[in-house]
Image 1: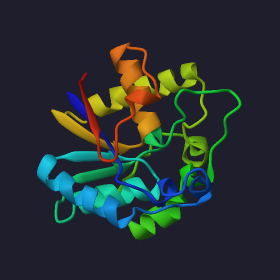
Image 2: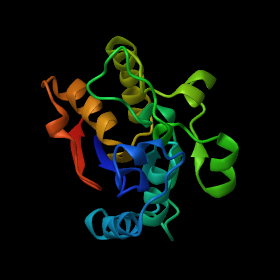
Image 3: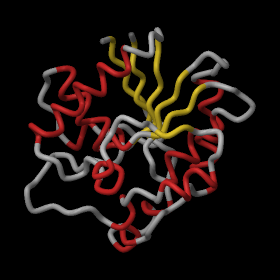
Image 4: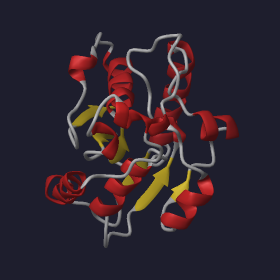
Length: 191
């Protein structure tokens, strides 16, 4: 199985850092929407594909624009929500990285399904500040659940820190923030 991790398009929270990191539920910018459209050429989807999406507006919008007019399976999961990288014990979740309410996701994205496996705590708190040990445990379970989908390729729309955390865990390499993917940048790994 191949996992293709794709970072969301440009979000409003990146336009005036650090002040813009205080924006709650930031959407894609017009550039971010164009970047999401370009994914259609880079990764053409079929109705047989599966996309797993972080429960944050900018990732949901990226997946929605990219998959428009495709009946592929779209699964929203907190196991690919924002994650601080590298993790620090004193860090906390910024307003721009807070998971949006399930009711809002279900209303705004009715064709997306919610991952039923994660606990209610993960749906509210996410994986942002979990210890490395906690993250690794959940990430390994997540990879196992992906394998149970029996697909050759699964796309995951997520965030720079989350992608880098999974990449470090799966590759065994020591990575830094310099390894973050750019907007709609991607990383692929065979599992």
